[in-house]
Length: 284
Ligand SMILES: Nc1ncnc2c1ncn2[C@@H]1O[C@H](COP(=O)(O)OP(=O)(O)OP(=O)(O)O)[C@@H](O)[C@H]1O
Image (cartoon, rainbow, N blue to C red; front, side):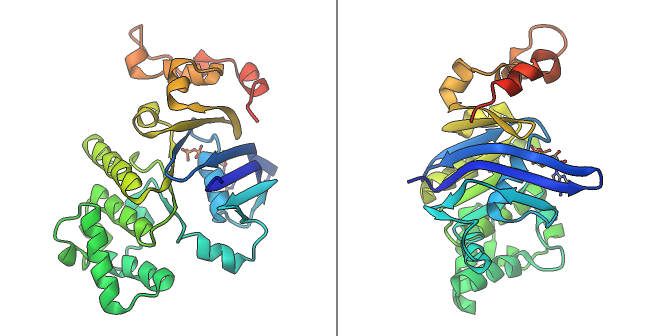
């Protein structure tokens, strides 16, 4: 059984100019211990589809799906209190801007211990012990002291480690990482990716890696879903996708990688593919 199974997900936002369809019939599955990358340009609906799965979209969003199941249970059909018990505990998410994702008014220790209190029901001493263990697991030095720091006293890379520790606090079965390294310095990006992959294997979590970076896809994913304008264009295991991409949009994404450049200027993706053909060939 798949850990997360989405069938025909549609997300429409009510806007001043009428409804806007950000996700248009996306279906995907992630299995236990599997890494699925969702790749596509900015605006292709990668984040919105996962926020819809988590139930984290604002009220202006209308979410429908034939199926949106976690561990075989349909999230759209269960009472919201029950869904909240799953989201944040069995499914955790980390975001692009680690400093903005943390609350600036509270110490990082308070923020991780709050998750342990609410979801795990640990008492004060057990919370602190577990928080220290988690900070150690994500490579934060002097964890006991760091728990007393506010987010602004830490670097972007350290804050992302804190976010990962918070996400891991309840031993999630599925972690959704939304562009987790995009806002970080290049040298730190590699460290955070390596850390995520190490933890994914140790904790045997399913991992959904949302990215626009084909390099990140190559390094992390077992399987890949390619999205364009809210639709799934292609789905393949990572080797097949790089060796024999089926959609002309995927071929364009690969051709726009710097290492594949042939001339003195990198082509833009829009120069490289035919939109009509891509949308007509969208995978279901
Ligand atoms: N609250 C909202 N109201 C209206 N439109 C929205 C809202 N949130 C997102 N959108 C739109 O939905 C579309 C998909 O956005 P989404 O954030 O999923 O893209 P993405 O593929 O994750 O790209 P990025 O990497 O830039 O986040 C975009 O056109 C975006 O402007």
